[in-house]
Image 1 (tube, one colour):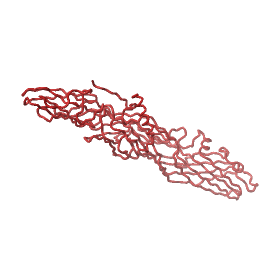
Image 2 (tube, one colour; image 1 turned 90 degrees about the vertical axis):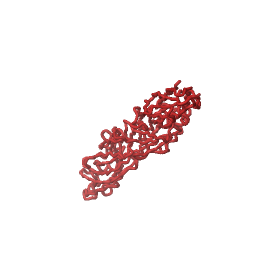
Image 3 (cartoon, rainbow, N blue to C red; image 1 turned 180 degrees about the horizontal axis):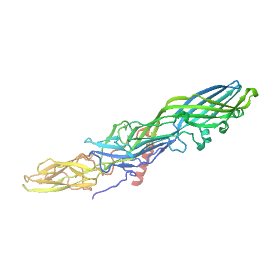
Image 4 (tube, helix red, strand yellow; image 1 turned 135 degrees about the horizontal axis):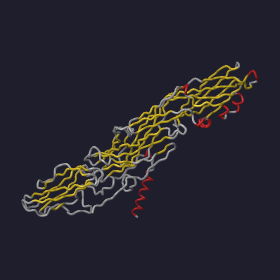
Length: 500
């Protein structure tokens, strides 16, 4: 009786490389649920198979790096006295209020993980870029400033600090008047750098804010002696450069970090591979920031009127400030995904086959069932060690979950014992060569009869059930940070409950 065990790629706890649901939460980041897919139609090569996993990351906070202009100064004469102003701005590249994430890296149609194998019983994995450009980096950003300014004339001086939150609360729509966005397509995985370049208006046309002193809770000293407003212009044309830094596959011998990079693991008996895959990238932002502060005074202290506030309009543009910047890398960590890769899984007889007694010059034949329990087509050829036992010499393809009826023809040259080794050569990853014996007239073919599956693999094959992935997984690298010890305990406890 053939034994069939069905397993769902997302829920199976018996699959060696499935650790359960893995997730992480970090401030400012949203990890979006993803679904792994498989190349069920087969890859271009019999010894290659692929799976895909959709990946998405959203960054929902300002970049850590700040750009400090230092103090920008301006002086002029008013009523014969020196009027001095100084402005310092500290700028952040920030989200647009109610405008969504600062940046999103999205691979909705799937990043392709390619598995290949030869006759060495090892899987080799590559993060295939492919020729499509269905990945995207989307950026939408604003500029948020903290501003300090000083005003002084004669014996009167005042210092005011406007932080970005206080300013934003006083602005229409609670946002700074700066909104720049762009989108760049790329071929997943993004192991080569993806650059998203943004444009900006002219500095003279880019006012972040302009507010009256009294509207932003300025110090009493300012309101007592000065009337007016402060504004800030700023522009930047940043380049958001994204790169996938590491692709870690459970059970493999390393990480993929470059285009064309490979990792490997031993092959073992299975109809498919379910591989927990953790991906980490980084975003670096670079550009030039131009900013210019300006003060508009409508009343100033008059030294000729006991320093009383006197109406007078004074425009005080501060010289523009320009600075090149490069941010520290921002880590981009995706939710780990389960990648499903179909495999061929060929089952030849495990036991010997006895044709009984055949007279000299006589003939006999036997139909031997060879099955493919795997999810990918199996390609095989068969050969015999003896010319008395003939088999078809052509290449055979067995569809997923299919079978092939092998005809073995025996032509007896004598009435004495005769036997042959029948070798099945296939694209089965862990058992590319399987051998079973067939004989007649009392030849020793070892144990005969069918096992409980009715199929087998020969003396050097694994005893797999065709439902598990290979091997025992190693812990993902520590950079993934997904609490694997806890997940391992979860799997163990569930197994105990199932067995109990």
